[in-house]
Image (cartoon, rainbow, N blue to C red; front, side, top):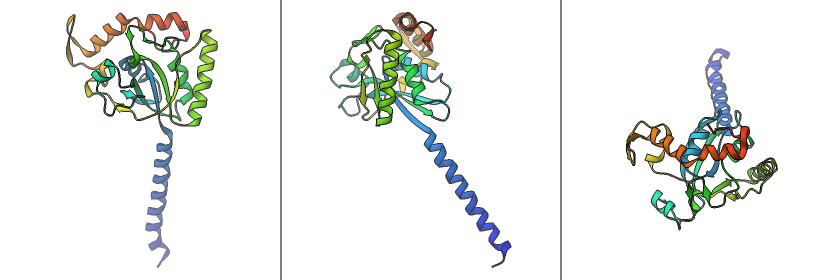
Length: 217
């Protein structure tokens, strides 16, 4: 076989190796973080603003009930939290940075829920998937507690299965779909804005964290 005849298959092999390496690197950079911060609409809205986050999915985790529904979770007894799965590129934003933002976007001193939403399903938590994440979460918690000057009750728990919430909950904060509210028909986006304001989330976060609050408007 001549040298020219070898060039084509050799080039193909080199291209294949290059594409495989790029794909592996891209997959390695894609990570997932699991946080519970009260209403998942709000946490989803906050973290989808973060550079390096590709998507935030609302869902349920922390309990034992398989395939839970929103009604089951909010009623109680499932053990699940309203939570989010944050899909991010760790070459752009680190897990440590996400933890920093998370603590300052919630009231981590409240063990009974968040803001106007009360009950076990609205408690805060960080769900870790390995020892490195646990160490990072413990460090971030200690730093936040020192900065706040108050005891933080947000637990750091081992991650279990994450269940996606129903489709109507996803991207609620920016949906143009019309829903019926107590104040008449509104788009989901406008209903969300009213809910967030009425619940006092941003006001309480600003009062706790001041200028360190990253998302409070």
